[in-house]
Length: 190
Image (cartoon, rainbow, N blue to C red; front, side, top):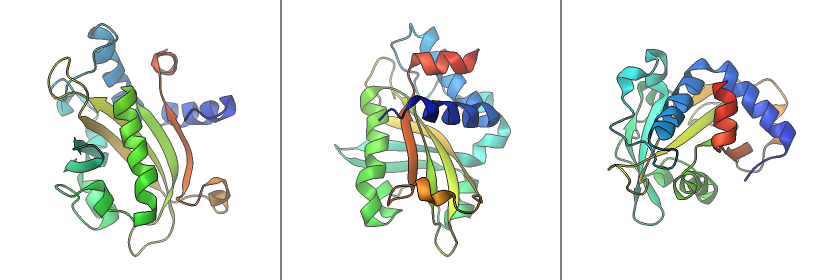
């Protein structure tokens, strides 16, 4: 899932420039480090009061339901504005075109299974609108201390893309996806 080194340079620049996304990622990573570096933060530790208020409307929480489905537990107000529906309670596969489900589900499950943050970016088309660019951060969290991660907390930024940039995307609109290890998170913390 790791892109080439020049891809990391681009992803790193995007994360550094998005202070809210960076703050959320580093909050998660510092909790993991405080938990010994191997125990993931719990959802309870990820206190929304500690995050910049500006990111709360862009946040979401999905929970693994069974082996492959992901149910939205929380969808920020900005998400509802963009997509025209409150995703809370819906499955991820109910909120996208069927052809995109396997690829997008895989990103969430990769984050959970590898116990690592996932950063991905690309293009999407909200219902009734044109192409939009997006950057999305996924953070695996446990419900109980030391338990395997069962939820993904994160945020998405959606923006009007510059013209012509969709050429780099795959058929589902994905441009890049990468799991972020301790090395990348530590580099971002410097």
